[in-house]
Length: 392
Image (cartoon, rainbow, N blue to C red; front, side, top):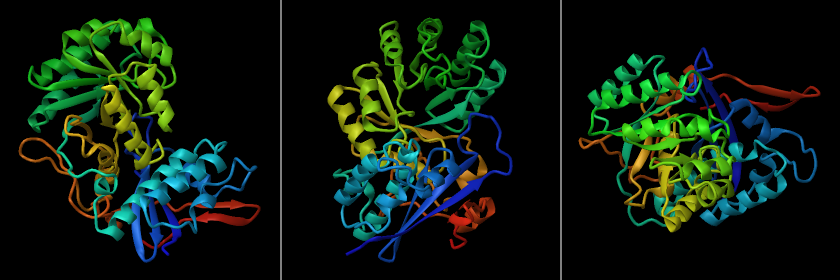
């Protein structure tokens, strides 16, 4: 019987991490070993806090470390991954970072299981075929409208047929400047490209502030307005969804299936975006994808880091032909590109396809990991709770 023998965390970081809204500045890679086979995953959250959630002492029966539910567990089938997830939900329900920590471990378990069975993860999820996805270049708004225009033209030059601009100055200054950014993005892209806008929850729950941007977004033909509000501001989402023709998108902040479902049922989003590194991994993301199909909502991945995370994020909807848009890291920090030795490159028509390889089909570059590796040691009362592995 194959059992989970080890879970290792590798904190990698750029030399300087800034306040820029760029999640590719550092990362937490996860390696799981079972029966002589290794799988890799990636968490999307504060790396150090995620490590602590795996090793921290038990506070009480519903606040146990994630590691207590993982190490030594049987791993023979997808059902084992779902079983471990259910145990963590009960035993770590008061440990709020638990879903993020488990996400990276869970992704690694799928990768490992796929390697054991010599099948890609999407086949383990029940899909017979994996369809190409149309990537959109995901990048931040420029500091000025002129900068945004330049970035848009550069995305076109690189043959992206869809582009999303996010965060940056939007909502932090006056309405006029925001509208100028939207117009600059469209002008730089031209008429033939898809344009999406992400404002990073900047309006909190202020429906009127968000609604003031809708006419210009409609004028420039934006296909969605992403995360105008906090993830749980369902009443605000619902109200805004009825105010214009631009559909709302959201869900990257969901750290369980129900949060994503509520955005669909009560928030009225037209696009549900799930980050496998936050929601609890590939399994719950697949559950959201299935639910979105039943409700006529389009499933989209959320990925702003490495191609390991990108591959994981595409698996849950790989078999959905009509759900073809995918977020694609356009200009990540070097570490996010370099920690994997292969990448999901675009074909001549601008699409990406998952490899028909065991597991996630992505190989880690251990030399690159060494370059960005930050050793971590966590002690309590003189005892070492965690010390980074030096074996890659």
